[in-house]
Image (tube, rainbow, N blue to C red):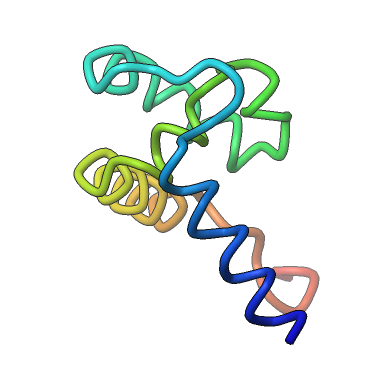
Length: 87
């Protein structure tokens, strides 16, 4: 029964939208690079770009752009060598 209640609350929340600020698609696009960089650096992207997460969750197009850019940038970052020394 609690699962049904939690799902109902989730659906109501999705219908009503975010309580706090939300960005437009244009504002999202302008801040997306910064948000991805902060996410990968684990530097509180939601504090730096308020409303971005709500927009990404509610806008499938921007959410897809975010996921794609996040994956691309993460894959392009240099990784430390595996196994220790290179000598």
